[in-house]
Length: 321
Ligand code: ATP
Ligand code: MG
Image (cartoon, rainbow, N blue to C red; front, side, top):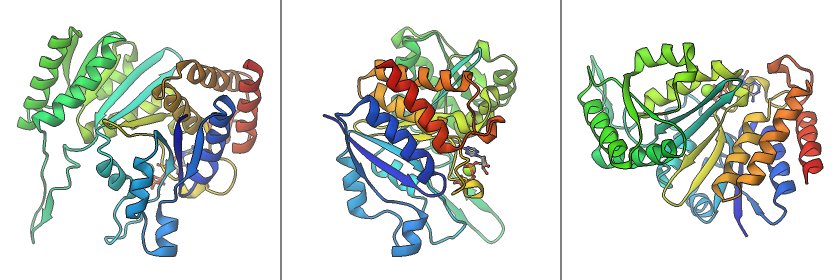
């Protein structure tokens, strides 16, 4: 029996996560859920956004369903999600971009690159070090090649014409693809951004370094109707965390208008990860049917509330069983 940690976080996390959890519990009544509190709200009340025991609790789970956390522009505040990614060594950020005629998975290296945290400020300049290690590249390359091996091919997003660090990244990814027999090509990230939006059918699995992947996947949201629809997985050797690509959206929090699709799809990814692709497919299919029936939240031009949309998906899931 799987143990699932549920982290609502901040903002609309408190609205979309309960919907996703209810659907998970409906398809897998055997799962054991436990709540873990982290985030800005907790920090405001207690002075700590994520304690030591919190990390231990998360480590004890088979999978984590995560909402979103607000990171205030306060220099004393450390991003909880970065803290968790680091503590659980969640090295692969997997972002499927799926919709009408689009089926792409962006695999973003999640622990190094420009977000390694090695930076300093001098009086007249500020420096951020971009670290690409052989070990870091090998494990993300292996993850991406394994995925591409069961799909079609791999594209390596890079800027090796300018950055030495990307020469290593491309070298390692190309070697791994050759070793695993995965068709692969390298593309410069700037050209790739435009080409991906104009010819999404030419792309399958795209592997890239931390910040390039961050930017590319938000841009790719354009292909499928916006941030409210995109799920993601953060995968480590043991731990796995599933969260919407969107943030805590404080501007719309507490109004029952947030789109819960990204959170529900994240729950579907969690099901697949825990070895239940049939339930994952049933949840995905239920979401499709509800959207096709014209039940939509405001961001997609509809009038359904977060809870009403969730209830509709729950009905569809129930009818399938
Ligand atoms: P954070 O600081 O936590 O990243 P943010 O203000 O950057 O929060 P995001 O959640 O990243 O906000 O999203 C940007 C905008 O997209 C929001 O202001 C919101 O209007 C919209 N948005 C994001 N997620 C959703 C959603 N699930 N449903 C509807 N609109 C959304
Ligand atoms: Mg944001």
